[in-house]
Image 1 (cartoon, rainbow, N blue to C red):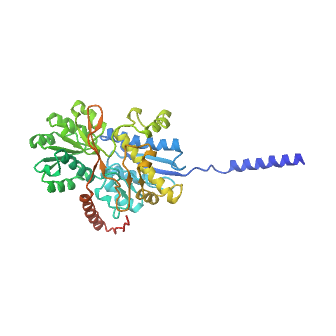
Image 2 (tube, rainbow, N blue to C red):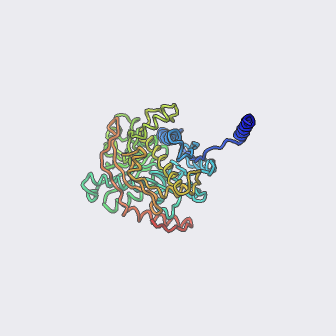
Length: 440
């Protein structure tokens, strides 16, 4: 009897073993993220650290947490070179990948955002344009799939005007002052113009604008105009090599660098270091954060760089654009995590992730848990407000480091919202879109 029982157990074990080895391996759920990047071309010095921060955070979440609630993060980079046509090609190539297709797109270009807005609406894939894109896409009743989180270009321009107004004792003191915008001659560079023109009429300052042709290495004539007109302030809306070139040309015509204020895409290490000592005193608005490390960076170094899996030099961790790419990954993952609370801990569709973004609510407690305390203000997105936060600070380059030189400044939504709604309504009429009714 005992021998029979032994034989039976052996046969059962063998049967179980054969069953285990005959069943195909079962893979955990995956969430796919297409990454449109530019690691080559004239914008590469700015595009590379952004992409590195994005990828390092993804890799850290996989290594430390095993993904998003057990769902592994997968991604694929596609090189756009910051060109709109290549960005559209990348989108088309990557949108169907992964078990449920692309979960969310970060175009990293306003031009590409303009080109993809209608496509993603049809394909039901949300776009996160953190700090860029179409300013009117704050209105989620029309732009259901666009999310300019943390700040639009109208927000940035409004905060800059408020800041120089504060320096002069109030916005009413700007009357008669001269503000010149030097901008990248593209959809990106043109975005702040409507807001600046409106503020100029309201407060009586003289607004002028000077376009700079892509990629921005030829600016001598622009800065000769600055020298001739002697504006009180210059707002710089550049990207890539255009920014450091602008600072060099400003130094050449002896325009004070502390009178130049860049947008948040013109306020990082690659923008000032090539200009050397000539960049000292230069200022820009921030997209909430500056350079520096917080608790999350320690985990990135521990789980990614110390394992030899870093996307770039360890010394770049914590630089301005690295942090911005990292935060872009943070909000993308937290949107998925929010959506999982409704749809389950599995691979989610773009439509489900869109719900997660629109219901994203990162309060101070959650921000601290994420290890980004001090880098980001609370963010609460809703159907009517796809921006979620309109606060920023000014930081200044001292020749070696960035330092905050202002308190938090909040854009005036009583001014911005009517502009947003008017522009969104015009877009809806032009495209035949019926706006949804937002309860919030």
